[in-house]
Amino acid sequence: MPDNPWMHGHPEEAPAAGIDISTPSFARVYDYFLGGKDNFAADREVADMVLQLVPEAPVVARGNRVAIERAVRYLAGEVGIRQFIDLGSGLPTSSNVHQFAKDSIDGARVVYVDNDPIVLAHGRALLAEDGVAAVIQADLYEPEKIFSEPMLTELIDLSQPVGIILAAIIHHVPDERNPQAVVQALHQFVAPGSHFMLTHLHDSGDDPRVEEAKKILQQGLGGSYFRSAAEIESFMAGLTILEPGVAHVTAWRPNGPVGELEHPLHTQMAGVLGRKD
Image (tube, rainbow, N blue to C red):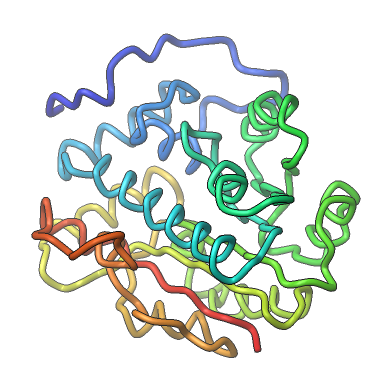
């Protein structure tokens, strides 16, 4: 495997009760790419296969986090949204949605949602001292359960606009589950003025490694789907898409001029923001 400075120092720890460490987890593989320690041998095996093919994967993961930060700071600081729901949130990192929101607006509240029990365990431990955020374990395919969860409704006023974060989660929804319908099913639960931020693996058509990366992720994690910009845009049907539309994460509302890409693989993760009118 290529030498990656983010990948060192991951001692194996005993998992919390009820957590299956023999099966790779999306959240824990992503955590590994971000240099986290909440991952296990099965997760690292899949991640290392990706890294052997695409050593730049951690750069893409960090670019995704930066796009999330830009979106949350825009929605909180400029639109005035004070409440966020991060669906498929993954494991807590050194930079989280509630931190971006709190830095940008007073009274921010955030609920993190993931179906991985390790996210629940680690997230609640992290947020115990915060008081403005909560984490629940739930399934994206059961939105009615998510939006009726008492921990969510106690913190989030669904009669007011909400920022919905769908970062690196819809590309795990296979075509047969109709990802457009999965996103649209969420619309009914949030008020007009709510915004949806979505990031997704993007098949730009200019990197031959994408096909091999698809095979590794689909075999190791049961499904990760690279899609075209047009397909990603279609997932925002029913929303008003805001500028700049679908753009790769380094070019999605940067703080300054867009420089040269660090690597062409940056175009393999795209972001888009839409508003419910």
